[in-house]
Image (cartoon, rainbow, N blue to C red):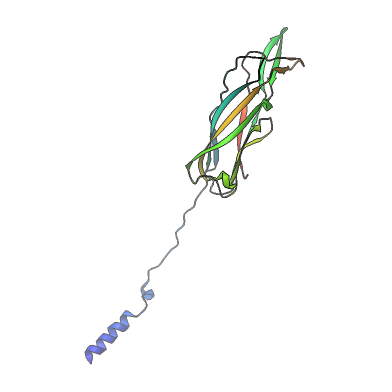
Length: 196
């Protein structure tokens, strides 16, 4: 009987809740800070043109665009492009005249290449939009846009530009002339924006 009583006491001791012997606990926290939205791009270099006024001519250029979304907001993003007219300055009768090829002579299309880091963006499932034969101008033209909850990480895009070479150009003196030889320069400005 003593053995049974000792066994029951031991069994009763084992059934006492362990919480009575629990250690103190504290919460632990970690703060995550977003690193921002950044873009980089390679310079588009148009192929040189040898004038042939008997046919329509084009010049092509390609560039790569890299978008890094490390904001941690899942807010979506977009990249827009604006450009100045292509300008050539020539001396005419002792006066500097600017001749321009309009920026609108250039169209561009964007292709999604891959996700370097992060989940790929499914543009076929309407998770974003890519430029398709967009016309360049002095106003913002969208290269790419991604809906909220998409686009975190680093993504690469290819942009193909086509310059339709005009046969006539305008000078700052109001004169229209045939396309002049020389180097025409334009400034391309790329801007990343939050939200699509």
